[in-house]
Image (tube, rainbow, N blue to C red):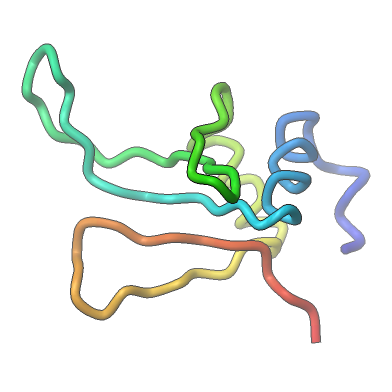
Amino acid sequence: MTNMAKLSNRAAEALDVLAGGGRFDYRLERNRKTGREQFHYRLRRKGGQVVTGISGATFRELDAAGFLQGLWASRTSGSTSYVLRLEG
């Protein structure tokens, strides 16, 4: 992981969460007030709790640096999960 010096503080925090078993979810969510549906990136800890303040921009930064690996679900078009890429 040679790109560590170039990462933002939020990206470094997200890497810590991902290393602890967390994941990024990209899924369709509905706004409770307006009923509007929209795709969102959410960083989740191993237990499923959402980490606030870290979302799409951090995801794109980590993905561009090559830190993420997708977990593709075969029977859904509504969500995709991403975990820390294992070297080797």
